[in-house]
Amino acid sequence: MQSCVKAESSLKWDDLRVFAAVWTSRSVKEAARELGVTQSTASRRLAALEEALGLPLFHRAPEGLEPTEFAADVAPLAERVAELVVEIENVASDARGSMAGEVSIAASPILANDFLLPRLQMLREHFPDVEFNTSASIGRVDISRREADIALRTHPAGTDPGGNMDLAQKVGEFGFAAYASPAYLDAHGEPERPIRGLAGHFIVVASPKAPGARWNDSLEPPAKVALTAYPYASTLAAAVNGIGLAVLPCLMADKAPGLVRVSGSLVRWNLWIVSSAHRNPRIARVREVLVELVREAAQELTGTAAELAD
Image 1 (tube, rainbow, N blue to C red):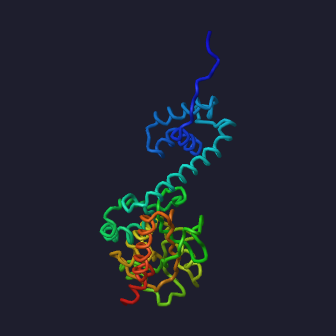
Image 2: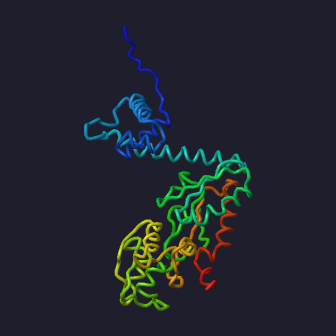
Image 3: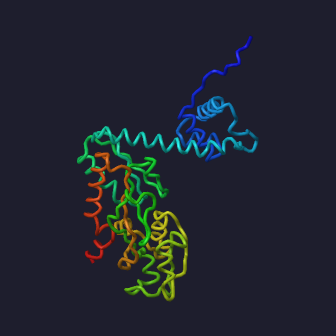
């Protein structure tokens, strides 16, 4: 006679992580890529979770995965589990209190390439037992979930980086100015300073809402927009190639070969540092040194160093 007692099963966090990723992407392939596992592993973990729960989470169809009503009930609970796991990891990291270990720092490509990486060797010498990881992306990482330990963020004046403001500190300013190539200036002339109008000129903007576009809209008359090019590395490349003037971050453009600065500081954004755990001495100490480095680089970040050199 066959037993009616169901074999005891248990939920596994790795299986729930796969479910959460599939729920978001509606794709096992995309979830596997996000989690850094093979597609077969992701499929196996999703099937194991469905077996443990005793109910299907997704209907498989030619056009993709369709979540069941049960999956919609499970999704917010899986998110709560993820938050608890992160909290446990944070508590354990704080309790260890060692200066040896990893510190991950996230920043925009400009801050990463032109501010952080030139100072990384100094940080390594200061913290020989710390393994540094850097992430250069225009996307925002979730500090509360430890997608990074520290983040450097720029925001327009009057706005803040959001999230838990207890973990955020305004540490400086990030300046923008106008630049052009010598060839462009030979063809169109250099605008008079201060720039109040740009009749006969062309401009390259990063986006219709970028600092350069808003500044240009305030002029009488404004320059004609020749090109929209993003990210700022592309905006800079367009300016170097003579397509038009461009309002660029001074940190990047003041050192760029092939560009002439044609204005003072036009716009300044606030620079914030955000970290995940003040109680972790390793993260707290690295954060303190980063704040010092930002303040020492104030003229470079705002663009006033080039103005003083003039």
